[in-house]
Length: 138
Image: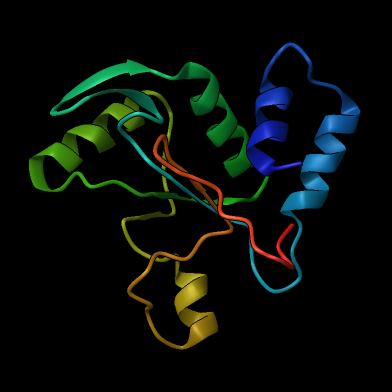
């Protein structure tokens, strides 16, 4: 089960000790923290670009919980300059903070000994994502 599904269960009405235990197990890694890259428009809020749409409160709660549990969270968005600052302020007002914004977390740069151009995460949460399966990845 994906971390997103477990986190949504944990913040929803179906929360129980088993869900939290499984979530803790999924987030535990030997080499580095679990990393989630989360999109802004269409994910944390309804997509009303260039405006900011209504919040996705359930997902915001899930992101906050995961960060409290030790996951690193990257804001991964196409917004830049003033639009990015507006999004970050919107997130701050909702108690969201990030370990990185549109870049790798420090632990990834240290692990690979350079800053990869692609933002590295264990999960990418985006309203336009499609999961690709290949043999050995099922």
